[in-house]
Image 1 (cartoon, chains in turn red, yellow, green):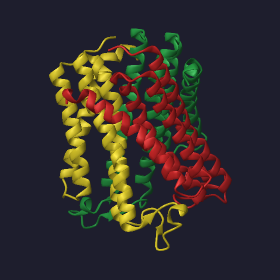
Image 2 (cartoon, rainbow over the protein chains, first blue to last red):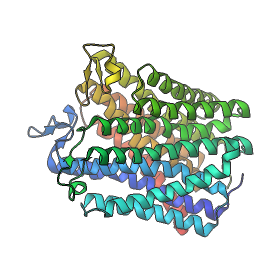
Image 3 (tube, each protein chain N blue to C red):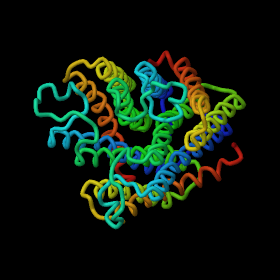
Image 4 (tube, rainbow over the protein chains, first blue to last red):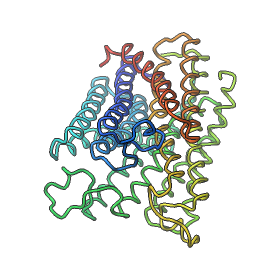
Length: 148
Length: 148
Length: 148
C-alpha cells in the first residue's frame, strides 16, 4: 500500500491545480453578475434597484456557469481517479503525461468556452480530458477487478 | 495509518466504477442533445440551422441532466466517505457489502430515472445509496469525533 | 509518505462532517418540494393531481437547490484539498484551525442562505470557506511545484 513519492507529488500538484482552477470559476461568475447587474437571490439585489433577479437571464453569466458545471462533472471525478490510479503501478513518466494532458485540456476547455472559440475546439478539449479520465478508470477497474 | 490491501482494493474498484459511471452520463446527455437537436451554447448550433438553443427546452435532455446531477450529489460524497470509512476498521465483508449496495443502488437509480419507471422505484434506489453514505458518515464521525 | 495520526483524524472528522452536511441538503430540498407541492419529473406528480411540474417554479425550492449547489462547488474541492494539505507538513494546530474555520463557515453559509439573512452575511461566510480552500491550495501548489 505504498506509493512512490514522486508519483504522489505529481498527482498532488495537478489535483491541487485543478481544484483551485474549479474554485476560480466562482469569481468569474461573480464578475459577470456584477458586470451585467444580474443576480439570483432577492437579498443580493437589495441595494441595487436596477438589478435583474432570476436564472438564465443573461447569457454572459450562464456561459460561465456552464463552464463551471462542466469542471464539476469532469474535474471532481479526476480528483479520485487520479489518486486511485497511483495504486495501479504506473510508470512515473506515463502518469505525469496523463496528469499534464488532463490539466492542459481542462484549462483549454474553459478558455475556449468563455471566449466562445468556434467548435470543434471545445469538443476536442472536452474529449482530451475525458480520455485521460477514462484511461485511468480503465486502469483502476482492471487492476482491482478481483475485489468487485 | 495502514489500510488492509483487500479493503483498499474493494474501495478502489467501486470508487473507480462510480466515477466512470458518472462520467458516462455526459455521453447520454450528448446523445439526447443530438437526437432532439437541442443545444445550449450558440456556437454548438452554428452548423445546424434547425437547432434549438436554450436550457430546459427538451424533457428528454433535462431528464438525463437531472440523473447526472443526482449522481454528482451522491456519488462524489461517496468517493470521500468510502475512502475515510476504510480507516474506521470495518470488517472486509461489511465494507464490501456497503460498497456493492451503493454501486448497485446508483446504477439502478439511473436506469429507473432514464426509463421513467414509476415511483417509488427511484425513491427506493436513492435511499439505498443515501443509506450507505450516511452509514459510512456515521462510522467516520463516531471514530474521529475526538479530533473535532 | 506518512501522515501524522492526529492530523489525519482532524481531516477525517471535518471531511466526513462536510460530506454528510452536503448530503443533508437533499432532504431539505425534498421537504420544500413536498411543502410547496412542486416537482420536476412527471412521474413524481402522478399521484398528486395538484402538483406543479417544472424547474425554477418555486423560490423556496430553488433557494435550497442553490445552497446545495454552492456546497458542491466549495465542499467537494475541500475534500481533496484538505487531504493533500496533510502532506504539506502543516502544524496540527494550524491544520485543525483551517478545518474548523472551513466547517464553521460552510454551516453558517447554509443557515444564512436558507434563512435569507441580509447580505453581506452570505458573502462573508462564502469568503471564509473560500479563503481556507485557497490557503490549502497555495500550500499544496508551492509544496509540490517541482513535480509540475
